[in-house]
Amino acid sequence: MNNMKIDQSVYKRLQKVVGENNISNDPVINQVYSYNWCNELVNLRNDREASMFVDAPIAVCMPNTTIQVQEILKILNEVGLKFKAQSTGLGPWNCVASDDVVLLDLRRMNKIRKIDEKNLYAVVESYVTGAQLQAELIKLNLNCHMPGAGPQVSPLASSTSMGGPGFTSNFTGHSERNVLGTEWVLPDGTLLRVGSLGLKDQPDWFSGDGPGFSLRGIMRGALGAQSGIGVFTAVSIKLYPYPVEPKWKVKGISPDYEFELPNYIEYHFLSYKDWDSLENAIYRFSEEEIGYHAYYTSNLALGALLANDKKSLLNQITIAARLKKPLLVLLCAKTEREYEYKKKVFESLVEETGGRDLTSKGKLKPTTQMYAEALRSAL
Ligand SMILES: Cc1cc2nc3c(=O)[nH]c(=O)nc-3n(C[C@H](O)[C@H](O)[C@H](O)COP(=O)(O)OP(=O)(O)OC[C@H]3O[C@@H](n4cnc5c(N)ncnc54)[C@H](O)[C@@H]3O)c2cc1C
Image (cartoon, rainbow, N blue to C red; front, side, top):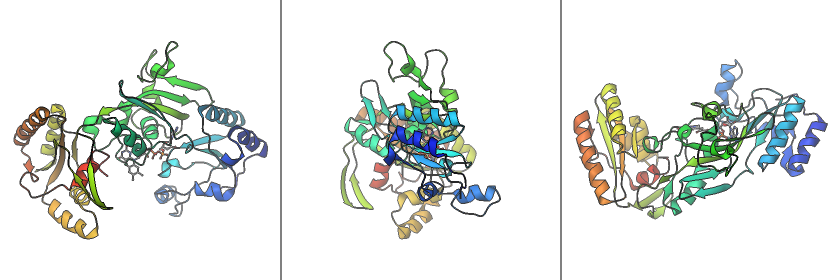
């Protein structure tokens, strides 16, 4: 529980910026933001009881424009209070770490500002989820990188402020490599436009570098600053061609969906005898650039991917246990020629790297749902 209270005059100034319905210092509301998944671990590390609650913010506000975010940060900087931003807010890294923090819940910043089909980028605000963006992109025969956490998280948060690997990383890279022009409100409220967005003439979102040296390394480095260096209000991210025909015909009732597979898609589960041969195989599959997926996962996780309920989970885990060190490779193509080429390279790589393909032998069969999910985020 937080004993510190926000000064009424500061609260009134913030209220004027966002409107009275978009700010609260009610202890009940504040307390909601002190609860999160895995906070028990944070508390244990700090020699406290394993509770799911940590410190609460002293107020929560919900801006909906970049100008409002700037105004809020200016006020907090002037009076010496801290800020904490959150997008979708799952995980202990969204909670405050001291008792003098105002939390910015960015759920009202929920617009896809632009999809540039020709130049392959999309501009999104904080509370646009990967699933929302992907639903629009599929209509245009496009796809985006999706962090492994799943399509429910924010591409903006992942690109600017946190992790970045995902199941399609072999093809779509890591979030740090997908971030282009960015709108960044610095802790004193100044607006910094990163990359081509900062150009004097014809500013636009297409590049994350220049004018001058690139700020992307400072902005996020490998893992991001988790709201420690300002608030990002919009970001442009790279887009990719959707790797197969994007019309998935579906039937069935949740969770037992069946999909009619598009042409030219093939999932393979390979087994390698030890870590060294697996490592070599991952390098080789990546070098030849044929896999939309080419990643290691545990037998247990593979069993879970193949199952829909507890009963089938046990069966699938027993079968997946046959793989020693599993490598999952997904081949996708738009044309028959591309497909035949990838299959040929795949077969020769399996032989070269000493892999055992349990899918071709019919011992493990990917479900059609697994195929469909593979192009979302494999979750
Ligand atoms: C179960 C689980 C599995 C995960 N697996 C993966 C994975 O495989 N790969 C991976 O890359 N990540 C993974 N993550 C982390 C997750 O990707 C990130 O939390 C996510 O990418 C960020 O999106 P979000 O909507 O969750 O952001 P949030 O959780 O809302 O924010 C993430 C961080 O960024 C800060 N932040 C958010 N928005 C802004 C903003 N506008 N300006 C400044 N700072 C901001 C927040 O303070 C927070 O510290 C996992 C998380 C969970 C809970």
